[in-house]
Image 1 (cartoon, rainbow, N blue to C red):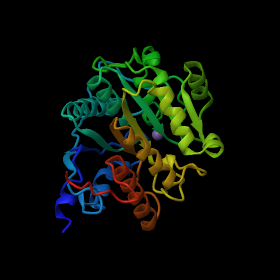
Image 2: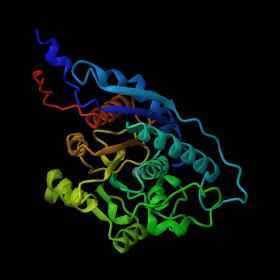
Image 3: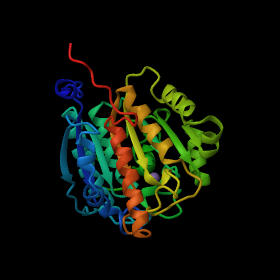
Length: 329
Ligand SMILES: [Mn+2]
């Protein structure tokens, strides 16, 4: 008796593309390359389109990005696995660019967080630089190759894409394709609790909006979201790039990750962040990175895969309170 109402639920015709990036050479640990397969096998596509979620959602699974390491004109010693990193993110940038050009929300499943250097680049090119970046993470991921203590690219993706830091990469080979056109003022962080001294300096110098866990405690997520979106998308006309490192969540709720830091946001707060961005109607790209199915016990892995699934569901418009069937007029 309710058939017609239920069939009208996805009237807005939301189109989503899912892209896997099985890359883990950016963080010095293996395991994150297994996350795209593990999250799909956990039942992602079914949870996005089943009757409780959104039966009419237009989801296209674009499979996994194929990539290989670049032949370098000169060796790079201060960035680990540089040839693999640059080979991967160039491909990621192209794929994300074309999925967004198709009018789809691009959901990229990593892989370690270095892949966001490619997703942001592709998104920025598709929107002529008119994007806002919301970065949910325990870490700031904005080291330059010279300030990084570890040399791991997963600590550097933001410096790769930020306009003001483009010269810090200019000496490195095989990056002519990149378009660092997003200004630092278009970025906001939420959930920081492990920030290097140089990263703090970069954040302050460039005036990047950054909410650490202390501010999450003081203000709460709704106020932080209001302030963050006001700064990074003041005219409410930008395509929003939500880059979610699963280690932004507290390790109690997402333990299977390579660099956990205790005292993070809850899964509920994480979902609330994603829901708030979804409600703007301008979510253009969503990254879910750093799930590592090799870390911890089976129970830890299952919990983390479910947390990742819940966040991705929120990015496609799933509402915890259920949807309202619109009566056809
Ligand atoms: Mn990260």
